[in-house]
Image (tube, rainbow, N blue to C red; front, side):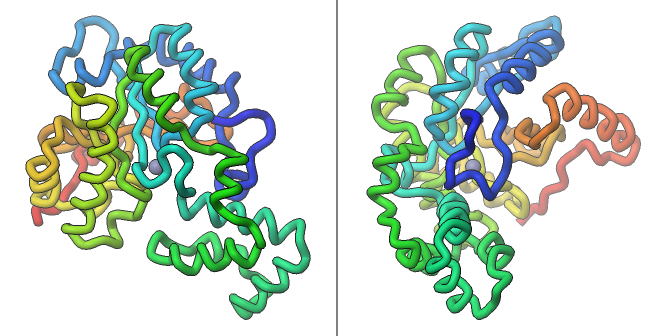
Length: 297
Ligand SMILES: [Zn+2]
């Protein structure tokens, strides 16, 4: 979610939801579904009546705290916030946000544009920047250097992320937190050991603030290509109560692993996205497409 003007670190990636759009989504959800807490979800306490939903926010952004939390409290909707341990307290910035910041600077500073053109040996370097992956972090940090911006100074000025104060307040107000990996690395690009390390580091952060709460983890980007045997190992090694993907409205065969429907698509309301999911489900069910297909190993 965002205020009217999108910050440089987000502007070139996607259009975040406005407060007004988010409030309309909440009203739609509450008219048709009933909200449940993470604890209810994990313990399988699903109330009778309207179908239940649990709302979650990824990436630990301060805007979610400042803009969404007041509305969630007003409407009495519990939610989970999934945090990256590397960015907590504004210690670093996710690589995609760094890319957006670099693009912003090339648009306003001709010198930076020339440096970038030379680095990529192409005038058309913006698609190349957007195609960088979490394995290109060293290059991205060098490019930030070329813009003349010091990322630490930038982070203390802009404060994109929540920190100690906000997370304490969230817990006190009855919200839950979960892990979202250490630095939002794409898990498809990592070995199994490196993935486990990412999950554990983010869960260490969660444990500090929520020592008795549920141990939850949401995959950064996607859980695509995560095998059943890896999910089993992850749950065992890290001691998770539940994990989450973002494959849409699908039944996942993996115990305690849930698929989520992303409601962040720009210029579409929650109502239209959920309606579309109903159609997919209705059309796909006879073919078994509503079940998530996962490789065993
Ligand atoms: Zn994320």
